[in-house]
Length: 327
Figure 1 (cartoon, helix red, strand yellow):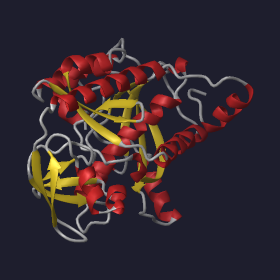
Figure 2 (cartoon, one colour; figure 1 turned 90 degrees about the vertical axis):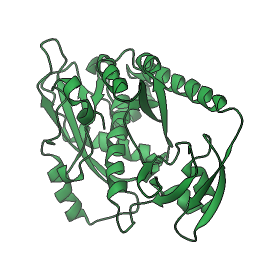
Figure 3 (spheres, one colour; figure 1 turned 180 degrees about the vertical axis):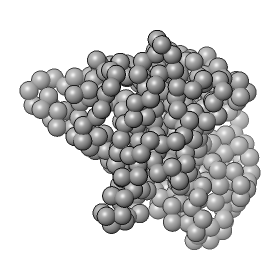
Figure 4 (cartoon, one colour; figure 1 turned 180 degrees about the horizontal axis):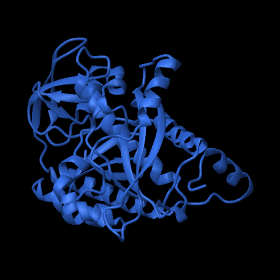
């Protein structure tokens, strides 16, 4: 088998010391750099300035006095009620700007908290789909054995109508076709990550820090200059647990917002060059926590998610498709 899954973990723990994936050190390096830069940016804020946040929504509209560059929509939600912390997917500033729940607020503004049961959940649904791709990357990173030679490549812009969320990867093994058990193990990994209810954090870093974070991933290093050139020299990265990846965002506030989930298929796509590793498109389908449909209906969604997602493939020239390949 290419990757180790839940039952194998149990057997290994019973009989031997648990094996570590080849990516453990890379994850720790990126996460450590994330922590250091996050701390540096917070200390750089200096004298604390107050801003007024006008919250619009249930149970009542209210004005909150928060700290510029430090307070987040999640902090605002704490003043409103515990359920708003738990179930708000993201914020909407001044009625038009989607904003991560854990991203510091920069100016006085109006604030709405969006969830998946809102009358118009389109923004939240798109952010959820993107977050599923990000979380899938975390699960893939922890699941593959060393000999698989896994590198995360990227994930395309979320498109609910496509029927699946996606993460593109490179492997040293060609013609890999995962078994039903292996796909099920990845699905279980997604559910376990959801059960941990880990915060999803956002950070803008310099080109140099990003290159250091992903110094062992040639695909990320190739992408970084093009991304920074389109973003004033900055790279936006997200972290869940120890997993760090590049994304324009926004993301949902926590892995705990992931509900029912199935990793449905893996499609091999031609590599982008003769010296490149085989590339695969991993696809899944999921529902936000608290939203349920019957087994038959979800089975239809699972079957649809098996079809090759038509989003731009990772074998296309990156400099021409950076806006499409990094969600």
